[in-house]
Image (cartoon, rainbow, N blue to C red; front, side, top):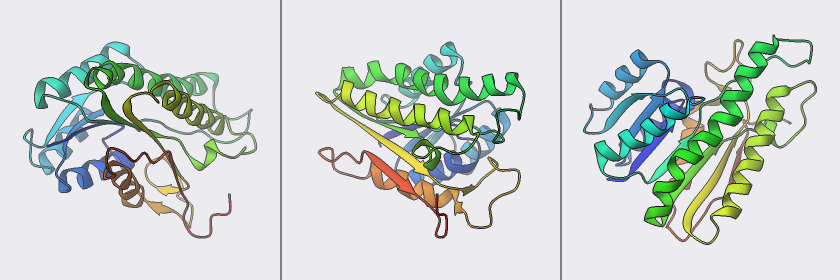
Amino acid sequence: MPVLAITGASTGIGAATARQAVEAGWQVVLGARSEDKLRDLAEELGGEAFALPERCDVTDWDDQQAFVRAAIEAYGQLDAMFANAGFGAKRGFLEETPEFWKSMIDTNIYGCALTIRAALPHFRERGRGHFLLTSSVAGRVNLPGSLYSATKHAVTAMGHSLRAEVADTGIRVTLIEPGAVDTPFFDNTPESSLEADDVARAVMYALSQPASVEINELLIRPVRQST
């Protein structure tokens, strides 16, 4: 079975992707800080024969290394890494606290970079692998007063930079760029929004392509979302 590791796997897009991946014949390694939720999800998916829960704070380098190591020790390999952990903030440069901003930047940007760094040596050793990075529609447009948007622009740039770095290998890189999604990300979900399963299907589409095909970006908006 191919093996997919997912950060931010306890809820939302990460959990939905884990369910669809196991259904499609993958083994999954579930990473997040919420250990109880991870264990519950792993049990739902059939236990450690199919899903391994592993606590992972993506801003902690030791956790990231342990996350990759756990995948390889449990299943013998790692075929794909979905850097999905992240959260948002209110728009406006007078909103939120500086501490909240720092936590968001550390998670959305630094955490994504650490996920890449942790998995890349294994992918390079095998000569193949697949990185999927959760960016956003907000990583393509400038949203007024949105520091979150700036973090997702950084993830988009990181994905393209990574792809350029590994272009001479069999390693693939896909940016997943959802619009509004009905997940715990929002306190008040927009009226027109995607379901987490909609985004998970896009992830699985990218993963299901032949090794010679690389889906660089998947921009997914709900109908009626104009920006």
